Amino acid sequence: MSSVRQEIKDKIIFNDPYEEQGLILPGGDINWNCPCLGGMASGPCGTEFKDAFSCFHYSKEGIKGSDCMEQFTAMQQCLQLYPELYPQEDEASPKQSSKDSAAEGPSAPSLCLTYQNACPAPSLGF
Image 1 (cartoon, one colour):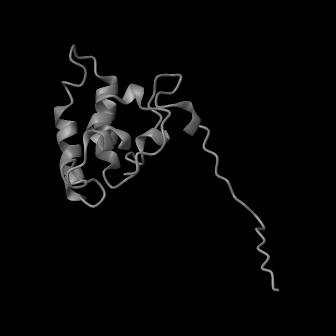
Image 2 (tube, one colour; image 1 turned 180 degrees about the vertical axis):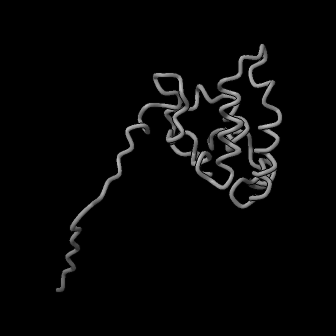
């Protein structure tokens, strides 16, 4: 009887101290490394996402974010350029029940509106 022995010599772990801080850092800044953002800040539309999200976060308007329409429009236009990475909700999968959709977590637009409740959550899978 033959046996197979597998050896793992080294395991490298990259530990980002900001990952465990939550979405908003103690000083009030946005933690772009929060896993709850699901890679949106570093994807192909990362700049547009950061612009829109920052505008919303720092908005002083009575209706928070109402002064950010231009930034959210730019982000949405960018997202539409990459449908394979950012599928529209109605294109994500055919006829999902509302229970199935709720289990998957928030989409990018709803994340932007409910960000304070988003962390610490696992990656959104974008």
